[in-house]
Image (cartoon, rainbow, N blue to C red; front, top):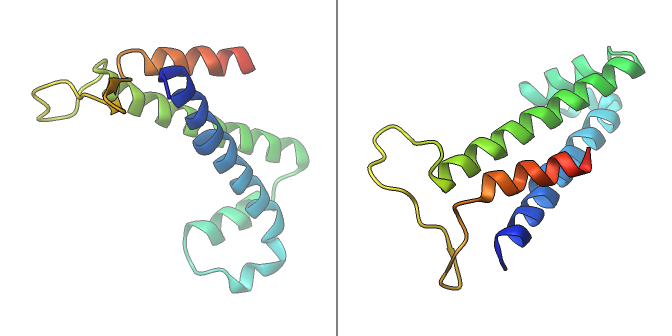
Length: 116
């Protein structure tokens, strides 16, 4: 797996699949609110189901933005573009001995832009 393949897999697994998971659960759990534990999911489902269709789409778009920003920030840390408190050296992200990091954030942002 090279850096582009890695990023494309992250887009599928973390961005698309998680977003689909959120959409499905927010849409399908309204009639099961009594079964949900107290907390974020119950609150989120309750809020989501009070929205009209247009605002539901805006809510999902905001979730996508949040996931996208989170992945981008994490890839920036792995690439050495951003640093963690106390980090003294760059990370080495290897797959089968081949370095993948260095351009992951740029590749991610380009792929996301191409999909828009």
